[in-house]
Image (cartoon, rainbow, N blue to C red; front, side, top):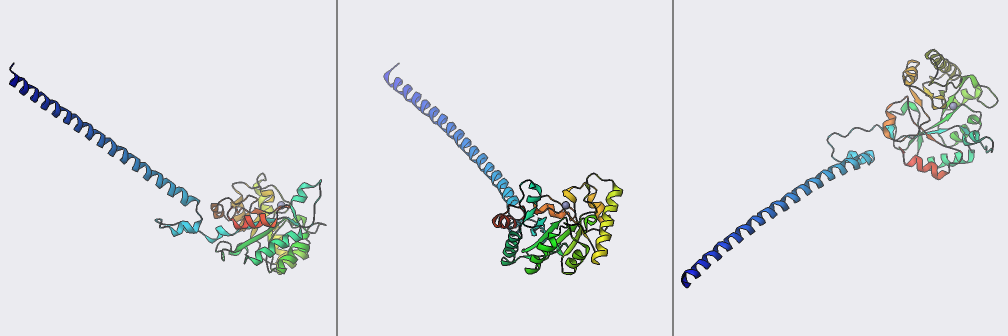
Amino acid sequence: MSLVRLQRYMHRRNLIKNRRKFLISAIILVFLTAIIIGVVFVYSKEQQINADMNTEESIDNQPAEIVQKESLPEPKPIPKSESIPIVMYHHIRDYDVENDSIGTNLSLSPSKFEEQLAWLKNNGYKTITFDNFSSGSDNKSIILTFDDGYKDAYTNAYPLLKKYGFSGVFYIITSFIGRDDTLAESQIKEMSVGGMIIGSHTQTHIDLEKSTVNTISSQLSESKNILENITGAKITDFCYPSGRYNEQSPKNLENSGFKTAVTTESPTNADQFSNLFLLPRIRINHNDSINSFTARIGKFPL
Ligand SMILES: [Zn+2]
């Protein structure tokens, strides 16, 4: 091979080599670009899904007003009653007995009770009754309830409620009326005339979860009749003894002419207020300080 031919041959070979190199580089570049675009696409899609999930979560956790402010398709109307705390008291008395922990825990001292009423008054709260519960009055409405009809309802709770211009709902066990430690007929009458609401707590504090339909029916209608005869008012509010009820209880109550019933369960979400026969309550115990009281009222529903 002559030198000239060899040079030409080498030149052509280099040319082919360079072309091949260029081609391989171009293919690699195209591949890399495709991979990068792919990765970016998948990543942004995932981000979008995460963002959507977070929005849903945060809407669920937000208070009702904020949810409504956001332009959701059709915001579910929130009944006002969902922001009305229902407080549960038993005894209002000075009582702290070591070997009676149940009695002690069910007793709130009159001074602590007054402290709570004063706080409610100073913070613009108004007590309402179950008659205007569903419509609600404003976001500073509250319902105060008292179970079992103890004598201190008349001697301690009632005077303090009157002093602050508040009303209360008192659930009476009718066969216990007139005992040493329970309200007399005349006291129930006086409280009713004085603006307090009287409700039924059955005749004998029976367990509604386990009683027969006939027993339940007679306990409901008898207690209602007795209280209506004493007060001259319509009795439409009920309280489950020891918080016990079963699936039929709301229907039984409705059939007997009641309109509301309270349980001993704590309110944990607003949905619990949709059934007027299963209303949860905030329990106030012996050791509750004014701070624990206001914290629970303020954070409502809990
Ligand atoms: Zn009770």
